[in-house]
Length: 107
Image (cartoon, rainbow, N blue to C red):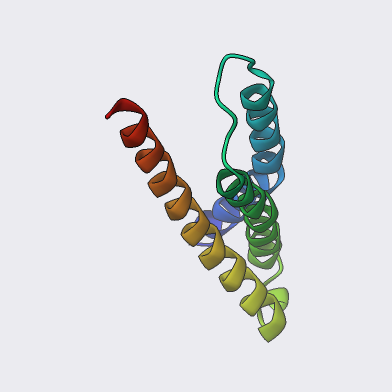
């Protein structure tokens, strides 16, 4: 069971470290296309919220998995759970806004 916890912690650390880099790269490619319409401010805001919250939850959660004494801190738990919840809400809102935008463009 401990091996699973360490592997999960390592994955959280990797996701927390790599997500903002990949997200910013994709956003730059998306914004640099001249033929595509500009994204809405809400779309950009949701991406920036994800760029902030995913690493916060992933890195702190990963470190807490490697150092269980860190997880005993109520502040760390609230930050990890809050950032994780906000990440899920922003991700759901992003998918909904993308679906609405696709339906408006095609219909």
